[in-house]
Image 1 (cartoon, rainbow, N blue to C red):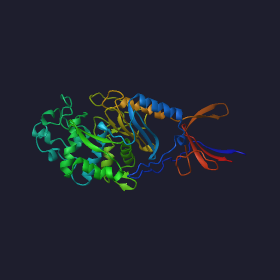
Image 2 (image 1 turned 90 degrees about the vertical axis):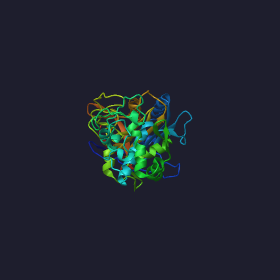
Image 3 (image 1 turned 135 degrees about the horizontal axis):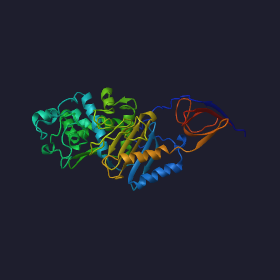
Image 4 (image 1 turned 180 degrees about the vertical axis):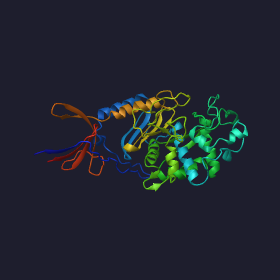
Length: 398
């Protein structure tokens, strides 16, 4: 048999690899997959990622490319039907619900919170309290004292005035938690019913908000968490169904919301900014939040490593659930370490002979003529994309 490889070198030739996003159907366990080999990911490197996750108390890990499952692994008895808590990653669900309530004219985020909680919900005087808006709750800028003995306490005596609203960013759970009664009083519906109507049912999620002490915590399966990430990746649209129509709110939700922490939107964490603050501190880090991840990444981050990472430029979503990997409220260092493993998944290098030099390139992906990720096929034109920006058009003829 004669095997001929025809290669057309295309230096600095740009091809869009943005594929159409796949959506799993509701009420079924069926979810299409992509082979890691089609992305040129090595099994030994995948195994190293899984070992790292297992060593760091992970319960589940799912990675989606173009909406399809590339990696899905469960640890320590956890399964695809097991429920787990989102911790502060669930704040992003609340943010989405506030946007839906505004879209349906139940509230305006510029409204004083007192419109929905009544007067006296804080320990501030009436003028100070009236200055706090729903927007301040979404952006962590209420000005309430986050250094009180119990920053999760939502009783009025725990909510002390510290600074004027909108003049300081501080990660403070209590004002966030009070978004639940804000939503319930604005809509006239319980938060779980409203969440079911606006998010869970339309996109096939399962889950429930439950009070744990003062905290309002969401619980779901890992695949439900991945579904929500996929909804955000596709700009609030699920399989052609516009879940959130208010594009202004959606874009603001995932953009810098105030001047004090560039890396914070409406309860979402943002990468690619020049600085960030973390919970429990006013120290400013002059760097990207996740320096080894794409700049357009947005993230839901929760205590003990509950994570949703969304990368629009790569049509990528990955989620992690589990126990504590690093003793932090927001598992940023752990997130960075996971990205180290993800960035190293690609296997193989190609030596290209020049007149005098040998340049080593790494293959990033293989796509077909319409930009879909593809495995190598005979008698088919494919595009091989390398990390130095070059692209080969290749046909293997047999």
